[in-house]
Length: 142
Image (cartoon, rainbow, N blue to C red; front, side, top):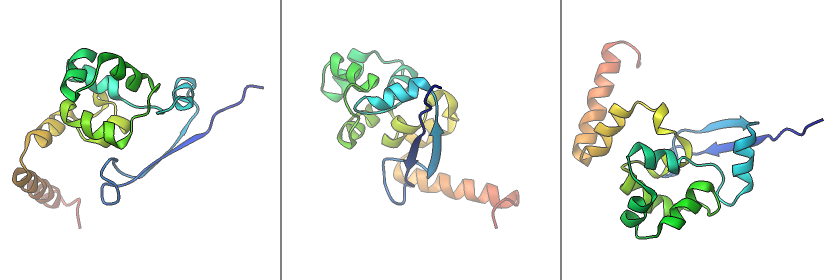
């Protein structure tokens, strides 16, 4: 009888940790994910984010001050994606550090992400206020 992997992945909310999104538990029985978990860094979406930004490994390496081989190691999980690496890579990929670990950009509402990433801190406050007002107007927030 084949053994099934039951990897539980926990991520924290932004309130508690600035690298991740909302708390989420996932049971993973996917063989590819199990193989990636067996390596140092576990699963990540670094390659998907790099491709989403239309960057080669060499271009991303140059942007973060490393070499193409290291980017390949990070993408494959041969080298772990530490908080230090996430903080270096995220600005070059115009995303949040936790998104590289948790979210495939092809499954996200990228128009909203692009607006958020390109907004200043003050503009982000305004965006939140507008979004909250729209949701209240539609009666979905109490």
